[in-house]
Amino acid sequence: MIRTRFAPSPTGYMHIGNLRTALYEFLIAKSQGGSFILRIEDTDQERFVEGATDVIYKTLEMAKMPHDEGPDVGGDYGPYIQSERKNDYLKYALELVDKGEAYYCFCTKERLDSLKNENGNETIVKYDRHCLSLSKEEIEENLKNNVPYVIRQKIKDGKTTFHDEVYGDITVDNSELEDQILIKSDGYPTYNFANVIDDHLMNITHVVRGAEYLSSTPKYNLLYEAFGWDIPVYVHLPAVMKDKHNKLSKRNGDASFQDLIEKGYLPDAIVNYIALLGWSPSVNQEIFTMDELIKIFDIKGLSKSPAIFDIEKLTWMNGEYIKKMDFDEFFSWVEPELKSAITRTDIDLKKVATYVKTRIGTSKDIANMVSFIDNLPEYSTELYIHKKMKTTEEMSLNNLKEILPVLESIEENNWNNETLYSKMVEKIQSMEIKNGQMLWPVRTALSGEPTSPCGASELAELLGKADTLNRINKGIELLSK
Ligand code: GLU
Image (cartoon, rainbow, N blue to C red; front, side, top):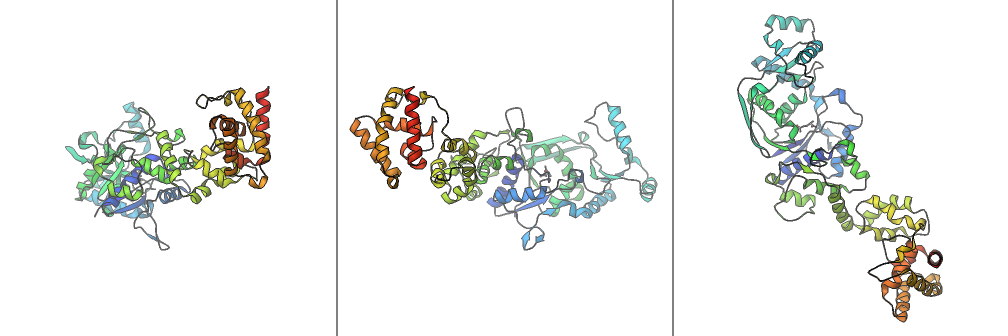
């Protein structure tokens, strides 16, 4: 059975690239009836961030990617927490020491730093294997005296070849690999060690992760070999890019799931969009439900070229999801936006919601779109000129003057879209003009904007009789200047 795992480090932040990794892991497992496991990789105690695990749960919950199995937390599954499994790792590291595949290293930080300085290069410096040659007695003496130590992997000579589902066959010369630390001086395993042990113990069949781990994979394979364990299927994913040259980073302000939610995107649309960020379905379709994705997902569609995160495409897709959304759900989602943009209490917010629903890309588009309701903006009379409708300022002035008494004559209790529309059309017909020649000036006078979420009669209904007449008068006044 296929088993995948999502293994985020709790950084308090869910990068879109990470969420995409989780999604592919989820889809690989679910498309084959397999299991998707959540493992929190928190062994880097220096990077501990309060509340960060909650961000991970919350995101997976909103993204509708529930994990299978895990420790029981009150009838529910908790995730596996790496730091709670501390002792296991040491046991496995000691097994490697016994086998001659790993060794104790007592080098001090000063000594390691001096290696860097000698090398004159701060970043790339391989450990010089100083402690590999310690005698058994020296090691025992150090351990007895509680000299702090780490355990390092002993990389053997030769070449390592492995297959990746996305990148193909990769071969590296082991001389390029460092004797990496497996257990740190605080007793915690490094990510590099813990991921191998955990993936094996959890029977993970497919390891899916960012391509930045590709270069470490040979070291992991040497560990699997040293233990005599099966090597999982590897699926490394290219980075999500902001543009051709830059990765999508925290600094962009829209690199995380949370950023996007705050900017008015829907979880389902985000998930749909990121599914296509580096994966091509076998059908010509862009909008997929999670169930459809599960049905159709195939590793073969994954691409090794970096995917560029296109916020406009996401906004388009979000708009499609908004259009399809159940109205009540939509209304409760946007009610706070509407309430803060419209403080007038005589406005039917549900009506406004109906009008904006088909016109927005994100819920944050609403405020701008409806601000004219509270306050008619200062506008230029040029707005009355509409080429297609063949309107001019002069004609608009005339038509507004013509429609004013018609509107005045409509009783308050008849002030609704249908009546307003039919009365206006009646007038239009009697004047023998085109609909737009009347409706455009009215719409403009009522909104003071080049576009509005609904037409003239709907606007009039929304604003109410008194305000409608006021705004028409204001238009007449402006056009008369
Ligand atoms: N904790 C690692 C990360 O967040 C996981 C990498 C992996 O999936 O193996 O990048």
